[in-house]
Length: 116
Length: 110
Figure 1 (cartoon, helix red, strand yellow):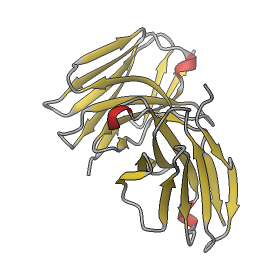
Figure 2: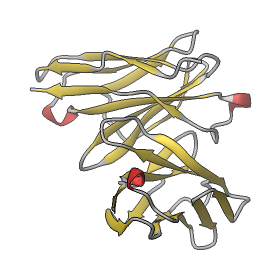
Figure 3: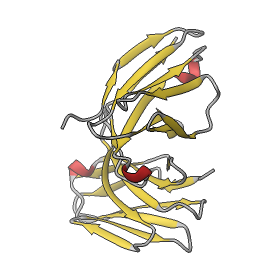
Figure 4: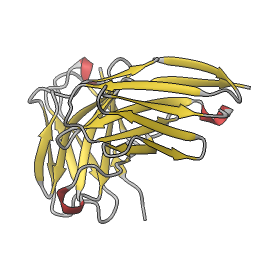
């Protein structure tokens, strides 16, 4: 099976712009989670989607949003970009059997976003 | 929300020695504790995990222990090799979210 894929891999934006990142989970996986990784804060949970519904959201401002499509692909959007949004954005997918979350999460390669 | 503390932030050992990384969590409802290894420029990869109904789990040179009463869990790597050099993250699962520690940079010197 193909692994989790993310597009684009690299992105440069300027302050005030918005950005959309895409994540395609492993075939058959129904749960997709997003994380922000920075050197100072490590891996921080953004939100999780299962069957097109957001089940949980981390402590990030409303500028960060996401959605999931019927084929389990997910997108996250960041509006009004700030310098501090520069980070590696990782998504991870898991089977989501019976709605469970305590399963192995498989990470994508990430999208590296640089905000100038 | 869940808060996961991880120590140490950096760890240097000689090849063949053991390495221990410790994490504590705050939410007593957390029930799943995975450990991820991230090599430079690569994605995090699961190396071992443990569920709250188990006290210890081993996989070759890697073991994880969990003390639910004290709310801490640890990763033990024996007979370390240079290829074990990476950043290791612990995490605790609470309410459809994985909360990660800030990571331990492990360096294994030959």
